[in-house]
Length: 165
Image (cartoon, rainbow, N blue to C red; front, side, top):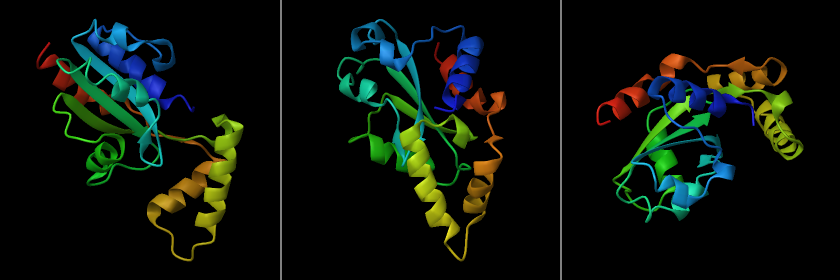
């Protein structure tokens, strides 16, 4: 919605000389043609946007390497990858490697329904007496968007993929 996942995807494609598809325009059968699938999606309440494509095709992709990255507004914290995995997948999915990358937040780029949700969130956080540093940063981002995407953030993903390709 804000373009951060797309930015990371394009950097990964450049580094790995890979193909790039929009998840809304690709079918599971096409994914089955690849040995390695890298899927990126933005986080919404710890749910990965578009993850349904991977979840619905896990049996088809059982012998593939699946790398997923979730892009969120919050700074990375201990346990975030486990929390995302637990929220989005039932079991271990041994062939699935998950990463969290920080994007950030641009209120003006959100669609109407997400603007409403985030405006409600803003009111809720604004009313708190004690705000965490993340909450203070998030409130500041409403008026001045922050972009924490860095090409260096994909380094671990690229190294992982090149270790077996």
